[in-house]
Length: 303
Image 1 (tube, rainbow, N blue to C red):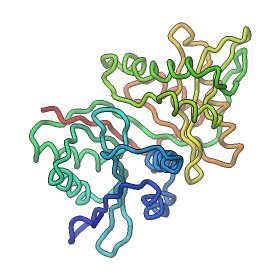
Image 2 (image 1 turned 180 degrees about the vertical axis):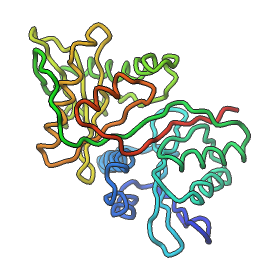
Image 3 (image 1 turned 120 degrees about the vertical axis):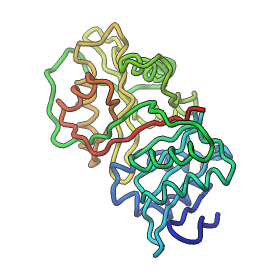
Image 4 (image 1 turned 90 degrees about the horizontal axis):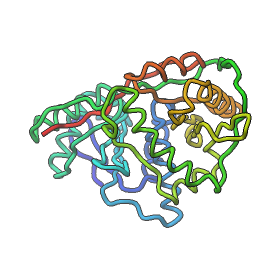
């Protein structure tokens, strides 16, 4: 697609995630922790497309260039869950406002925007001004990177990689993760839209060896931790889920520590998101050696 507009920050919308990676890859690689969500999704969907999986027509990938043509920002609209919010990486303030105007001119219904601040706030505010409504915060998140891993107090059991026999349980716990996180953060259950992998996607994750369970001393599955494959040398941990009856026993701390150790051992950097409204998870990850990198937000435009 042609860049928009012709003066000031230029926005280029692409349909092919592979083409997006070819154009914006150097920019993403320059700050791979901050770029983790966009980079990992782009790689995953590019691989699916190569396998013949049709991607939704609503998807797009954004490259932001300055007047000299240098890439200075990026984003995507590739969420598989309603209301299909764009996800924005850092970009010049003017570009975030220009993006809102471009989406409005394109006639796209954009009732939510996720991603890095302040770009997400500026884009959402301009969308609300142009289309009516007010911006509300659905969730404040914080991206962390692991420094030196600090081992937690050991607990009985061990980590094991999920197999295809775990498909149903893994899918169930992926689905339960965000609803339970909402409750723990004081939000109504289901307030946060999120991706629940379908059967084919979950099978891909399991076959890729990126889903793990913690088994207690009796061999029961008591916790799940997953991680994305590395993108530009960075792997993102999540989701991290312990059923309510098993919480408070150290399963999560030990599982995340071991998954993080394995990520470091494969030569990658480890990162993860926390919900700023959930002090328990923030405390756990800080104790393991995760340190804040950037604040992000999930915003909705209430009309």
